[in-house]
Image 1 (spheres, rainbow, N blue to C red):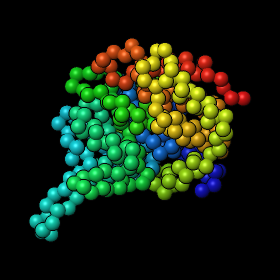
Image 2: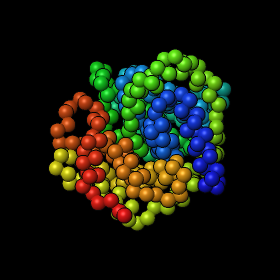
Image 3: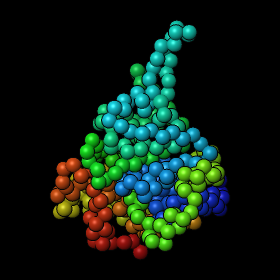
Image 4: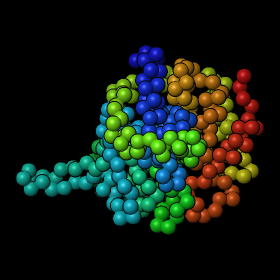
Length: 314
């Protein structure tokens, strides 16, 4: 797929999402960035700001399979990945795939289920496969997990462990709309009806080719050094207990490539790295003064502090 065609499909995708998520172009950019980087997205915010709507709109904008899983305390791993059952007619055991076997999967209120069920997602997120009864089953391509959680409600929740947070490409917060956008939301057609009328603008095959085009985006060595310097700074910062992993640096590299493509370029610039450092790194670090039971903190200020001290390549 030619770069011009990729840019046009990204524009259509952005416009489709903008019809549902009003006044949040930067958030839409981040969601598309995670998608093009072959990543997963954690949307953490208060109820009613459009977390689930964003996931639904993204799935409806792509002509692919979609499954929503409502995570609850009694959800079992088999409810997510599937199970092996005995088929009396065939006199044999057969695998019944769970809802994880879809191109776009929404894990709604992911922190409301037990760690046992949360861990069922680890292999799927990292290796794009699941293992059951000594057999391995490959997930559809492309595959993306969108997860939501409420950061202010802790009763009956199970905070995501660091190993799982590290598998999310980004953690974002949508935030409240400004007064003009909220007025428009209030007076316009309900988002549920808009979603029902939303038509796909790209196919799963298109998305695969777009992701391949992103991987061809040029990243100069001085930008690679810049990413590494930011990562090292998180590991030695006086206010950070745990810095980012090598997986995180590779993720920022891929995300920067995706953002460059969204901005209509086939090469990365320092602004791509700076704009994504916080969404990619903030949920991965552990500050020294972290309070127990808070879940995923907003550590953007620490990342911003690091960005102000690391030299930007010219």
